[in-house]
Image 1: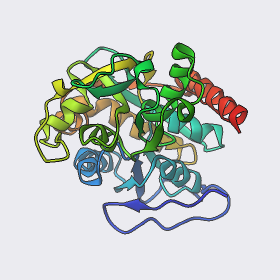
Image 2: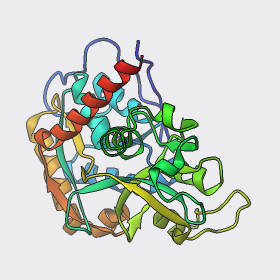
Image 3: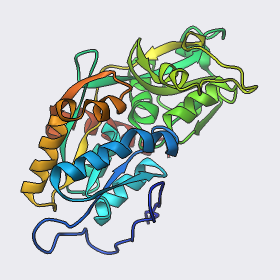
Length: 311
């Protein structure tokens, strides 16, 4: 049985809905909830997505309330129950939602400064460490992000199997743990509780060490400030599709279209809100479809099969 997750930040927790997926009785909803995966701590995530929730509410004429999930699965289950009409997913959590029967339509994702609406999974180590390759990390401690994270779990499992012949992270590394967010995984490396951390990576000028350093959060266990140059990439995946903004198919089509258009218009209509989503590193929003995530579905299917073999 799947446990019901709760949401943090914002107003009161959403009311749970049991039974079959929620369907609007008639017409447009009177209010909507926008659930996002926890890529950072709750405060930073609220600062990043709170203005977007207000922008969307103003643009579509329906109040939109932000809810920050405790984990990635909570967003999936919130949409399954009809508690979150709008969601921002990672590509793997979106794929898992669809694979498990959630009826949600991906609308747009972000095009980055690199000119593509995609990113990479990388393995970070400390620059002063002796580790030069993945094979040097055998028996060491790996910090992942979340079971439903793309760059912080599913992509490393898939690409390390394909490129390095590592079919079991638990068998290769001495210890593997989920830190809960991209920020926490990188900080585990920074503070010495992990030897290597899996994380998202957009470009040499846009990645998690840089974003944390810009906010004054990149510090070691003694509180000493660190620089992005104190970290080094030892493995980089193929390009992954950027995570989608997705809306339940039970939301009337005209409302879904309004939300999509509002997101596409965001860079021109409210550049401050748009820039806040990526620290000013993204170029625009791009229209997408479910087929854009077929490779991610295939990746999850491969990982699921590998997991079954090891049971």
